[in-house]
Image (cartoon, rainbow, N blue to C red; front, side, top):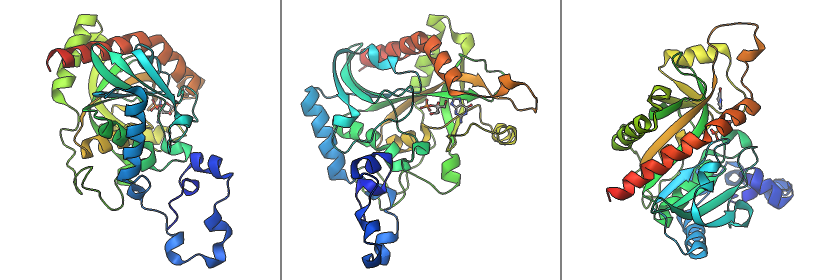
Length: 326
Ligand SMILES: O=P(O)(O)O[C@@H]1C[C@H](O)[C@@H](CO)O1
Ligand SMILES: Nc1nc2[nH]cnc2c(=O)[nH]1
């Protein structure tokens, strides 16, 4: 079975110059070799351990909180102090970021008294990475010692009560990629990470949601804060009106292209999860000729830039509370 990077996404192609030696020698390849590698085997425990050791030794820090910065929300990592910065290219076996607004840096340092590690740039399915590769850094976080995952994203607001710039604390998700039979946990299970059949009810830590709501009040942004359901689609296309109508009927409040597989991976290895969506655009659920109804990445980035201060404040205050109560 080909387990090389060249068969598992854009990072691999870059390294191998788009040439997979198994494919070149196709005549001699056995049936086993043409069956795709199950996702869970792309990054065996030992490889994740090597990456984690590289980060812990290179930073001389053991992080407790992991942060994934959503599109345009990289400034969440800029408030980290005494930071040791690792470019993704320089981390062994790490994929590269290919999307604007995702710098491709891992930042380890101190935030509000806690050691944190923040991904300035996440990996998306639409970039060509299998889901297990998209969420692999969550397992790296776990083996670095991380107990809490803070996942953030930019998302389209489907709930008609949501406005651009609002923050939706995630309390549940609808896993559309999972409905289609795709999972970061697909393939043999390694019990050192977690169980074969993890339960996902209560994935989003209620205590952290309540603390964040309280913080929202203190910041005077409670009117722009919601608790809702996120759904991840494969992207890179934004949704059609019919798709948005269907998602709304399913109880989805905000839609994006990430986070769900990261949360699944985090819950599998028993991390506490806090996640929020910054609503960067309103999703139209009725047909219209207005150009304004079309989502675009420039708008997503601009809204994220405008709201980064509030997002940073929320994250920093929540970490301060976690530290105070531990
Ligand atoms: O990484 P996130 O989920 O924050 O980014 C969203 C989804 C796409 O990558 C991009 C579309 O504008 O924003
Ligand atoms: N799928 C999806 N992702 C987004 N990211 C930011 N806005 C959107 C959106 O409207 N749809």
